[in-house]
Length: 178
Image (tube, rainbow, N blue to C red):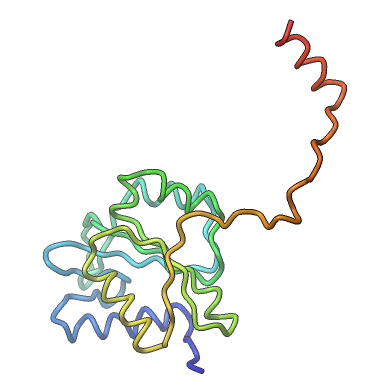
């Protein structure tokens, strides 16, 4: 069984691999420049939906160059998460074509729980993210599985009989029927 390093170490290992491919990996930021585009890696334990929305709507990043900074626009953004993201975050990417073309999510929670699995949402055409997936598979023997929709509820969780309506629901139904 391969042990997956902490997320920030994982990204550093990957950035070294990017340098070997001739891509420019920023020293101080988790940003890779390849084929004239910037690919930003954001790593964290948990992502909150409001934070996610704010960050994906402003894809600008600052790059440290000596004692100064310059701002670039990230073409692609990958969220590398220690914990599973809220359902609303995944749904936002799946349901919004503009986001799905530039934002990916890598859920490493299963890998950190000891299972060789990484759940992902990646509908981008980012060569860097494709390489990242190969890296996870080859270096850490992780199987990458796409997340599209939550699985259906198991049969035992679906009520067999309709639930009784509350008094308020009966009154609303009567108003709309009459």
